[in-house]
Length: 269
Ligand code: CO8
Image (cartoon, rainbow, N blue to C red; front, top):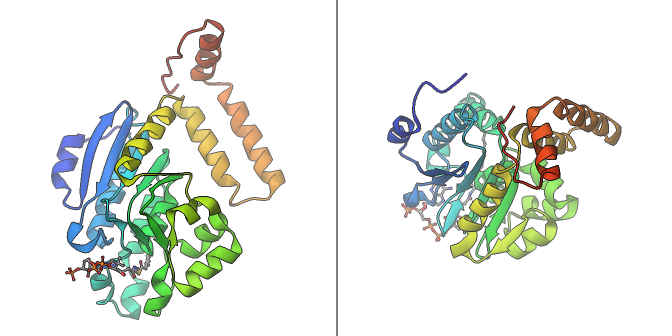
């Protein structure tokens, strides 16, 4: 269903996010709570969930870059907000639903991470498909130091990204790792100087956005499936997705453009 409100109207309602673009199919979203190092309070998570749902209905936006400031991608859940919750409130926490809405985003998402990505901030970065980091970035799950543990996917996504030993070390000690270590471990795809981090993420996003939307969607889903299935099931899923794409106009256009030695014009059909 197409969006009933414009991006401009949506932007006017935002207090914790800054938006730039869309530029050649790429929207850039900046987390903006400088007074709390972009700590993720419910207001921010709600705005992000709503924005991502809006982007999903917008065919002109084909990839999204999510970033913070040079000092902080996000310093975790908002501890001042969390301090007010008792056990019952934690059980009924609207945050759970907000995270699920964010997690359902179905377009390529690139996190450009400078500074700290801690706790829920690291978990948010890990929801991205690709992480590009400034060399000043620090990734960590420090919850254990607060007498709690990761609660927005940290134990599950981190171990899949960096393997058992490093994930255990990070979660059980609470100590963060550097951008270089995160790249070596496979959490981050590229490291650059902080000043170029967003620009580089936008560059990668534009490369992605040039490709056929349905092929992007199917390839992304197939890759993510690898986390949930055994190899045989995953290969079957991949084969079905591959076959499905044979029915798209963009597949014909892509191959025709190659043969005719021209750039393809993909329409998302
Ligand atoms: N929440 C609220 N405010 C914060 C947070 C936070 N997570 N982090 C920083 N701030 C605030 C500080 O209180 C400070 O505000 P003020 O100036 O008013 O006192 C301001 O941001 C600047 O912070 P610092 O002065 O501490 O800056 P430093 O450069 O000295 O230190 C650090 C930066 C190391 C990042 C430090 O601020 C820090 O350790 N922050 C907390 C990091 C942390 O523990 N994060 C994990 C939080 S728990 C979590 O994420 C669990 C998620 C569970 C999700 C469940 C979903 C269903």
